[in-house]
Amino acid sequence: MVFTKKLRDPIMRGEITCSVRIWQSPRVKVGGRYRLGEGAVEVTSLRQIELTDITPQLARDSGFEGVVDLLKTARHGRGEKVYLVSFEYRPDTTF
Image (cartoon, rainbow, N blue to C red):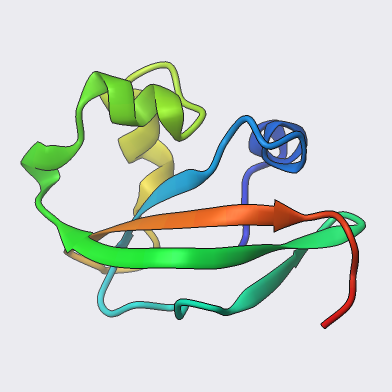
């Protein structure tokens, strides 16, 4: 998983533990580890949601000021399916 620069430090501090992504199909899997800084994020859950499920609170929990701010970043390619990815940051690089 790739995160915008402004989200990386809060993720590594454990302040952000979810991300909304708009993809054609899932690009991560539960249990997968994806390098970030000196460690990695480990995906703990992945579920498809509706666009209308994205609330202002979910946007803030994902590190954004609001839904519009989140949607500017969430779309990757031509995807139309919305996914909620939950994860935990692991500070070590043991894979």
